[in-house]
Length: 337
Image (cartoon, rainbow, N blue to C red):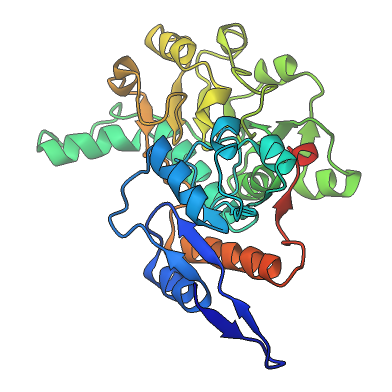
């Protein structure tokens, strides 16, 4: 492990940083300048043993959402591991409490994915309500026979009610965009927003999720995956919704009972769905994939060049603060989750 010289002339060891997936070139280059970094040039997903081995070699681990790090793995971490600097905002793949118990700090990259994810929510809403993939498929097949008055009839957004489940950073960004489309904003959250924030968003708060679901035309799920939100949208709640309602999820797949959603869509009890995340990762129910009123995306809600670079910058900021003996600005503790 090499050394670096501080401004006062003293030297300190370069931190050993293990990165689990390939990151944008600009991020990897800067990391190489700052740290003794171990990169994953092949961008292959590390299995459990490989992750444990990386934790044994590193002072800092930089994982992604695809890396599940549980208490058993943390128990095998090397004595040098003191920070898990997650490349991403979500943390349900890391046992934060177990890390804290072993004296390992955990940080994430909030804020930087907010606007990009909110853009994708609106893209999915438009795609499902205006049947864009169906039109695209006809054009790509060469079967289009020309314009017809009743072809590809979708729904107008203006005047519809949007329900937002989870009114954090992303939920509020979605609300701001929804206003521009003429949508009436409703929301359910663990805590009600401050009056001035609620007024600025022109949002109506519902203490009862059931009551909100029965009244809205579109549901946007923007809540994290926690024990309390697992299958929050279940078969019973899906039956409360209008048969023309549309569900969009860019948050965590586990919030929806995917089998129940598939059954509801197949039975015509739900109008459509736009999903960027799935309950079982990349293992998607084939019956869901076959439905014409469903838009499925490969977890690309935050996938912009600018966003990915900013995520890397936040990771490096957290690591540099840790190296300098300062609390990482995005440090997470279990009480925050």
